[in-house]
Length: 435
Image 1 (cartoon, rainbow, N blue to C red):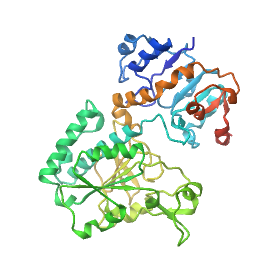
Image 2 (cartoon, rainbow, N blue to C red):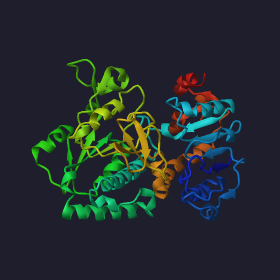
Image 3 (cartoon, rainbow, N blue to C red):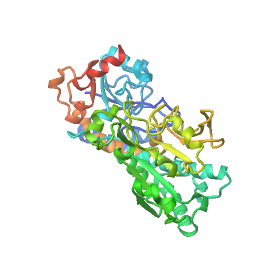
Image 4 (cartoon, rainbow, N blue to C red):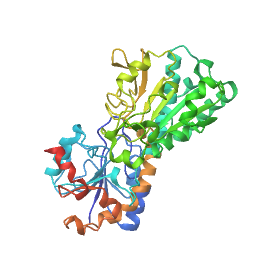
């Protein structure tokens, strides 16, 4: 009988998530008679005893497993010939730092299923942590805003907040945020902070998670065009948070004059577009970067723009919550993803240097690379609930069959990057990455 292994997560010190939780493993053992081996982990949000209680084997290693579930990237020396691995590999864009990992999986004739590519027939992702990245990212950004303002000598109700992972649960965090919301509802924020504006790039699961936190406050949604007029209108108050969601046509514009923005053309020819976002940035107190980005698209904030922005006395921007966390990516000043234990830095646009922490001249950036792990139990529960229905069919798949005859469910087959170490048809382009 095919055994499933649950890996110990070792890429990050504070990675506590797991792909399958005890509740779902219990059901799979009882109903499908699937054996599970859970690698020992003292930091995993669910304890070894909880897995043992539902019938899983606890072990120092998972070498007896043929299918291995993880969350983040795995060390290249753990892969075993002809086995099947499911995890976020971060390889589909040709990420240079993970090309040795990809090459190793090819050499070991691995079957690689990439969570990010498990989609329905319309390309909609079915298994994701995005909502929790948005939730934790917005909590952290409000906390960062409070600490940064306090550091500047501005008393504010956000300074009572904590980083996401320091709350016992999402409900506990929401309770604390609701208390801050009530304070603002009663007393407002310092006039120097008004209007308090939060811009969000994107409208997917990450964005929805961030908005779920904003919606705990009295807020009003503005269009980007309304944002540009807000301060001069004097039609705002210090008891309201103003939320602005930016879509593709707000972020980029055709290079050619008098050409109308067309979404599909933008997706197909991003090189024909320029930045259209910079006009809005000086009006934002907090920018939440929640959108997908790849290098062929224009950056939304460059280092050169931040230098110009920093010299603008009317600039409001205090915090960037870079939830997408692409190093040197859509936010060029995000030079790296930060760690939960050291989550923020201040980027000085003049010296072009970052300083970890809340002090220094410039823009504060929160760019935690594993934000969902700051809400590990809720994030793991939701991920496992979406993933577990595929497990029976995965176990029953004979991977020795040719790709076109594999009995994998369609969403998993769409996510199969490597089949016995060979790139599957949709991923042939990745061969160039490891030449």
